[in-house]
Image 1 (cartoon, rainbow, N blue to C red):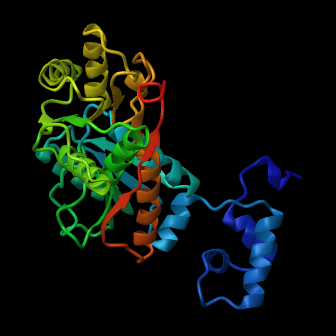
Image 2: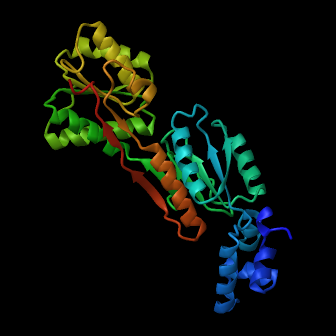
Image 3: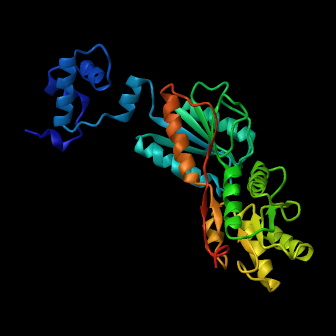
Length: 336
């Protein structure tokens, strides 16, 4: 006699042991109402005895779901998208969901193609990951499945979006500088048309207004690059040598700023404290001194977006733009 354990246990084995039909066993295991309580318990007991694990595809056919979700990203570089995707995939794995990843590379036509492809694969839901925190056009209106937006919010307030709280993150950074006794704080950041740059500048103003202090000069807008950080440092130190702290809108800018400060014979943090943003390990931990920076908790953001996609798939959507808190990572560029 061949043992049942020598092959994968099937729903037929469970039905046979419980003394019911395969259809009844399936209904019992999937929580259908038209099964008597006594029968359901007998089927569940048989499934436990045989260590039965339902086939995801078969279970999906019964429930109308495929247990598959789509992750659609526009972040071709992956600097911000990858942590979000990792967090989402972690949550989906815990929920035994298969994941299909598509990279639209910032191309709207490619994005539409991938949406059609994912729909043809009958995905149960979709997470759209932005390439920046700029608001993006909604794609939810004509889709038959729930969609959650991560990192870049949808322009439709009825959609579900999760973004980092950049205003709060910047305020955290500036309050840290104020707590260190710095009073002449300047701001160097990225392009003015980026929402991230505008939000971080707003956070700086919030913290300075709370302290009753003016900003040291106007916000200096440029590119998200080390080159801009170096150039901004040269201009700032020439025009405002009294500055004792600089909040930079990215780690790239901060790394370039620190380099230029050192070349001019000034010391970080003794003469000038410097804070970055993003907690990009390639720069934040390798810059000398290592950068104090703001971490947007992108993996947590992705994980939270996935959990709310599960809720939306169950009919419990949470519309609106949800801003998740950032955290300050203190290193040597502010603490000697």
